[in-house]
Image 1 (cartoon, one colour):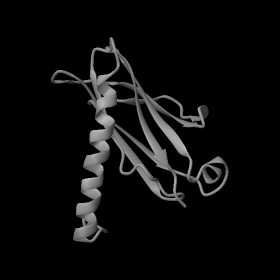
Image 2 (spheres, rainbow, N blue to C red):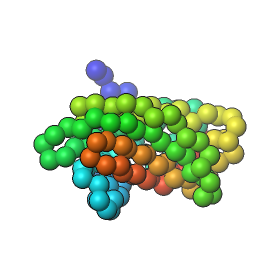
Image 3 (cartoon, rainbow, N blue to C red):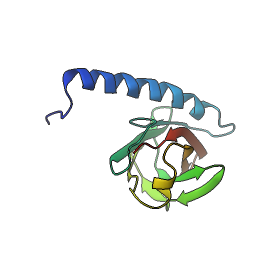
Image 4 (cartoon, helix red, strand yellow):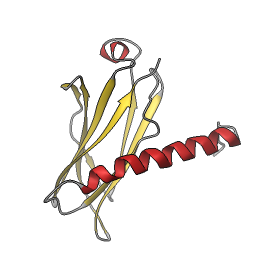
Length: 137
C-alpha cells in the first residue's frame, strides 16, 4: 500500500501518534479492579470535520487476547452528547471508524474540548479509556 503522506509528514504523524499513545495509555492503568489491560490509539487529538478518524486498541490479560464489547461516547461540556451502540470485538483488537459531520452538533463543537470516552466490557471486567479532543474545521 502506498502512503499518501510525504516522508516528512509521515514522520511528523508517527511522532504525534506516539505522543498521543503515551498520553492516553496511562488512563488504562488507573481502572481499579479490572483484571485486564486495555490500550487505545487515536490518530490525533484534533480531528477535522468531514475527515475519517480511526481509533484502534487492544484488550489483553497476560498473553490472552480478549473478546468482548466496545462502544464510545462523546462528552461535550460535561454532558454525553452521543453514545454509539455496543459492538463486539474479538482477538484482542478493536477498531472504531468515525467521521465528524460538517453539520449539527459536531460543527457547533469546533474549538471546544470534548472527551472521547471508549468503554470496554469483557468477561474479565470493564474499563473506560478517555481522550480529550478538540475538533477543527
